[in-house]
Amino acid sequence: MNDNNNRLKSAVDSVTVPPFLEARIRSQIQAVQQPRPWFLRVANLKLASVGLVAVLCAGTALAYHEGHLRLTKASKTSYVWSVSNRLVSLMGAALGDHINCSVFRKYPKDAPPLAVLEQKLPAEYRELIPIVQSQVPSDYRLLISHQCRWNGRRFIHLSLENDSHVLSVVITVRKDGESFEAEGLLPALVQADIPMYQAGVQRFVITAFETPGYLVYFVSDLPQSENTRIMQAMAPGMQSLLNKLGA
Amino acid sequence: MADDLSQTVGTFVSDNSATTAADRFEAEAVPHLNDIFRTATRILGDRARAEDVAQEVYLQAWKSFHRFEPGTNCRAWLFKILFHCVNHHRRKWFRFPLLKETEEFVEANLTYAEPIPEHLTDEDILAALDRIPADFRAVILMVDVEEFAYKDAAEILSIPIGTIMSRLSRGRKLLREQLEEVAQSYGIGRAAERGQ
Image (cartoon, rainbow over all chains, first blue to last red):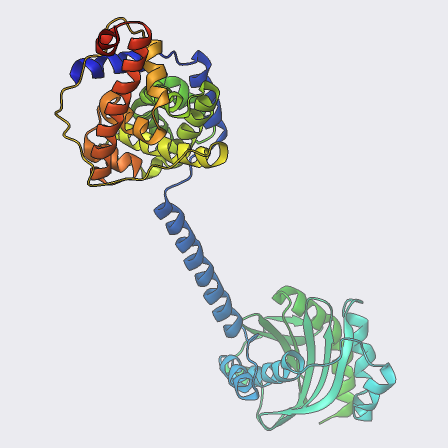
């Protein structure tokens, strides 16, 4: 059979192959990128999935840590305590009130009429509203003006928001022996003979001063310098009013 | 040729692994193009279709070259792709009568094979080959022309080795009959002698 096979083979090999076939095949291959091996594709998918899950976990953890995912009352309270306890008690009290009222409570985005805001304040504190509104940038809306209580302490609280930031003016009656210096704080600066104290934790910053009868705080998520600048502008007017009120 | 393909593929795939794959494809697959085309021509009986199928074979081979294990039989792998493509096109183009296999029909492969008359031309032999049924023709091409072992031919054609043997035996017999008829028409060979 070998001779026959050779004849057969020779006959089949006599068929000429078109010279352009090879070129045409090359051109087709050019147009097609070879797919990557399945294990690399699967590995890439797995890596991408793991990466995505890691980013989601990190994002969720960060959001939880920053208080954004504290949904129940207990978890919110826990968050307020965990943050405010990292400051000296006088600063922590004001921060706790700010977070509790301005950050966690859902107020309408539209500012209530001024008359409504004024009615919610005791009459002697209503002059605070124009003092505050005249010194904060004009895009901030006054959303809250009320008396509130946090950790057994009463506060006069004004809260303002724009699309990015939340600000609070928090005032409380000074109890006997209370002072920032007594808590170990030193003034960061003195503005118009008013010593200013500063503190900060997480994204929150506080600038505060005291009068003979009151502790006055400006709490926000602004940069510390901006927060202090606004407080410096408001301080003389507020000090004057509060001094008139006494304690 | 290797440089050509490496360069052309390299313009589309920049990483080193793809360039290496192009080099390997060039070295291992492209040299078998002539065999692939000739077998496709004999199986399909049409050069134009054989060109299409050969291109398709190489495109499929390139797309799945990452699955080809280096060191294994690239030629057999290409022929397997060829018959996969041929079967696909067969369903599209033709209605070949399928053979009824009688597996018990395995003629002795060592029976005497009458030599192909010398006066027959390559065209005569190819014409005789083209006249036998495609399934027999495929086995003859794989075993007698491309010289694959039965086991490899069975793998390429996706049929049992027993079927390879029976088809080969019957195919050879049919080919001999066809060649005898051609020889007889030329007035040569045993049949012609018996007839005169």
